[in-house]
Image (tube, rainbow, N blue to C red; front, side):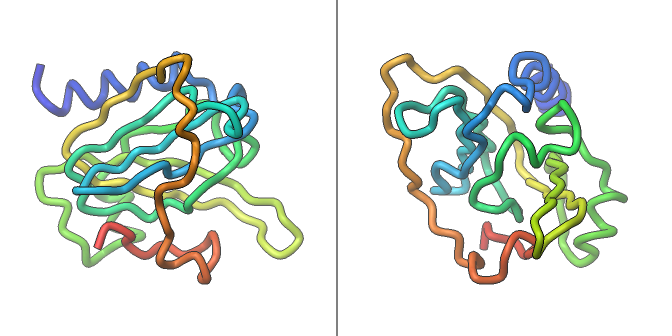
Length: 158
């Protein structure tokens, strides 16, 4: 299986096993280190991480540091994106031969309403259920653009 097929299979697995509406306490960037981005999710994030979605050899991501299940525009938490779609938002970024993953979110706050697509450009995707006793739930990530709000679409992988 080549990398493209692998990534498509993992996206399908995530969407089959991890319906976004089941993660009541939402999704968060657990860690970004050495070009590896770990997104965790849980039904009760104060006590445990339930699943990890790991992007390997990340070149680009513009996800907010955390979001809730209710923000997901679709039942499927993640999808493969096209180069054309990515280029509409990020016309100057060269993805090379990497995969483009998309996460579609909607916000309905008094001060922020609208639909946004966030991207991760990476070589490979991994997904697994965390061990039952994995209580390392804290954020080990600081968003350098947190003061710019949820609509900030800058590359956080730089």
